[in-house]
Length: 102
Image (cartoon, rainbow, N blue to C red; front, side):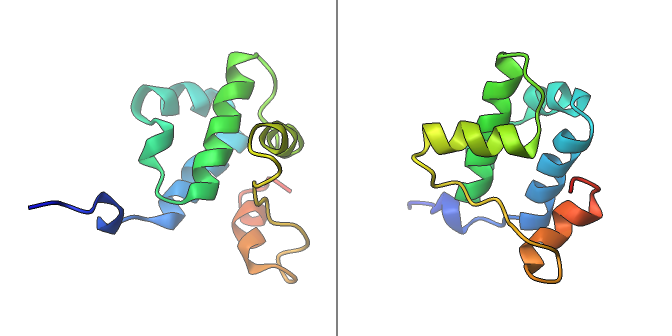
């Protein structure tokens, strides 16, 4: 019997909370790295964002949206999707806004 791991329960809001926590408090990155690896994220975009955060952390650079976007554009040929516009214009941006990251 084969188990499809992609079909296992996932929580998009929890993934967003982890990424948002790291954006708010860079010390959260150390805590995340103790428990989480890129493959733990279900959402492909979240995997890319977390990967960029790890790369920035390894380079001792600040973990911020502009650098994440730049890092991922180079690494993934611009395939990262960081929501743009106000929360009213783009509902995906509400989480970032509510976390105080914009």
